[in-house]
Image (tube, rainbow, N blue to C red; front, side, top):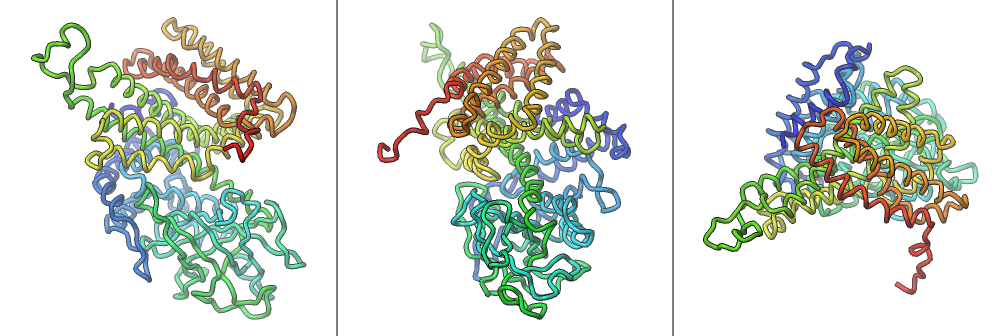
Amino acid sequence: MALRETVDFLLHDWLQVGDLASRPRFSDHSRETFDAVLDTCERIAREKFAPFNRLVDTEEPHFDGERVILPAATKAAWDAYAESGMLSAAQDHDVGGMQLPYVVEAAAGLFFGKASVSIGGGLLTVGNANLLMAHGTPLQKQVFAANEFNGRFSGTMCLSEPQAGSSLSDIATRAVPDGAGYADDPLGPRFRLRGNKMWISAGEHELTENIIHLVLAKIPGADGQLVPGVKGISLFIVPKKLVDTEGRLTGERNDVALAGLNHKLGWRGTTNTLLNFGEGKFPVRGQGGAGLDGAGSGAVGYLVGQPGEGLRCMFHMMNEARIGIGMAATALGLAGYEASLDYARNRPQGRLLGAAGKDPSRPQVRIIEHADIKRMLLAQKSYCEGALALMLYCARLVDEQHTGDAAAADEARLLLEVLTPVAKSWPSEFCLEANSLAIQVHGGYGYTRDFPVEQYWRDNRLNMIHEGTHGIQAADLLGRKVTMEGGRGLMLLAGRIDATISQALQQPELAAHANALAGALQQVGAATKAAWATSDAGQALANAVPYMQAFGHLVIAWTWLDVLRADPAHTGRRHAAQYFFHYELPRIDAWLRVVARRDRTCADMPEDAF
């Protein structure tokens, strides 16, 4: 498999990305500029990331009492990525960006994820800056976002807390006005934050001059109590080091302290931290006056947007990150597939079944000649290349939402609402399964550190957890996305699938797949209605994960069929699609059966019976 060849086919032959150059925003671009970006990123990933993937896994970040220490290769990789301009690739020319389509940016990011996902590119930094471009003040964009786009600063998202986890309504971090003139700070209303945040990726390091934390916190009411639920959540910029209105470091450290490093199964090249805000380790002088909780006490934070709208603002970054996580999972799956394919082509073992195979004097065959090895390789190919097509399709929808006409933009918005939980979760589950199969192809060697596939599995195992766990994505899909706006998004997706089916039926070699997809679409539609037949959310969502698995298989089958329409003669893609339709799509029957029956086996299990 030539990954670049696959990417080029999906971008240009399937998605017709070159057509975007006819739109005003992308008029400076052409296939040549798109290819140049991919060439550059592929080269940087090959030279600065891939050679150090094992190094950053074995030399974990550590704290020397003052600084978090990472291998020098991590700094070199960050600098090369920042110098490439990819941090600001999608931004306007007047802020130093390339005005690159997001679909090309996403494709370029694939090479970094495959080379070393735990060194990573700028996923959180770009998402942080993009959020500020959407919701920040002009000065916040200039001081914080612009310096993230040029690589001087990096960014994080600080949501979870030790006692709350994914339940953001239960966060307890407090933000109080910093003195009587708190609203007059040019960088935004200035607050003091106190609290603890957990699972903060890239929360402490020396790779950049500054780290810009986006922190969810609650502003107490007049009675000093926090507003319960998500409506009380606001969003704040909390820099590691304080800056002036020109973005220059003031020399004063903000009261953000590292409380600990998490030692992880994978992604070891990225620090993951517990941060304390306002514990007093780095006290910051106040603005004067008496704040509600004492001016000068706590970490300095600047309000983003309006009070109480923090979660709405943060979803801008969270949804972007979810697509990024799906692409990271896909990249790791592809890395494992490539490694196991190479191993299978070169490892001699055993003889083929049959009369001739019983002759021990005959030479051993390469394991790729065994049918079961082909099964495992085909499964990996069908999962990973199907996931890649889906991720690039979603990225293309982002471009349509931002640059299409009003009707097309609204359709893209709705389709993204429905597909985002799938784009995050399906690759996270099934590209992880691809990594497990890659280990199996290697046999005992796959379970050792002599080969890279065990690291790919460890790195990929995170993706079902972060940026919204599998269960959260499933509840979002069945509980909100397929029913929102009267089910219009689901109907729109069904219409797109129906269109592919109708077109595929005109090609005799695709007719069987088209009919199978039509049946699957009918099953998913019926199960969706059955799940909500009683309008009881508890009953409907008891089997949300099996529903999401079936829904995801439907979407991947559709994606494969649509890809085949663009090139039905390609032997590798044809066999991978056939594998998916013959071996994978039938699995939706069992998943949807419990959904349609609103099966209570899991929900009704008494705790003491475990």
